[in-house]
Length: 121
Image 1 (cartoon, rainbow, N blue to C red):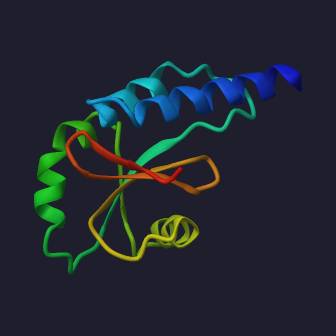
Image 2 (tube, one colour; image 1 turned 135 degrees about the vertical axis):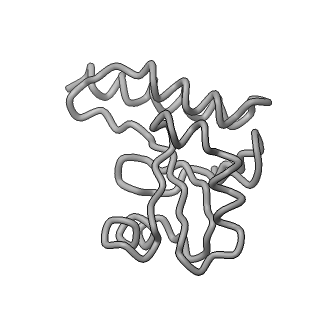
């Protein structure tokens, strides 16, 4: 159990260090990719919340097309079952919202535009 706790502390520190990087979004995505597959390790994810009636969702989707196509960002309709559960837990009420969530769907930070990440801590 100590090994998992140590791995989680290391993971959290790696993710938090990205919030100060000039290329924060890329840093988060690369960090997620290199995290070991350890059972019980809480890995963050990058989620783009959208909705059908959202005025800026298409533009946001276009801006992050490469990330979406590579599966580095998961797009969820905020009104879908999965999307509404994650959004409610994270406190997301508006779209578009590009966010970093922990494995419990708690909000770690929000991306307002390329490489502009706003950490919550």
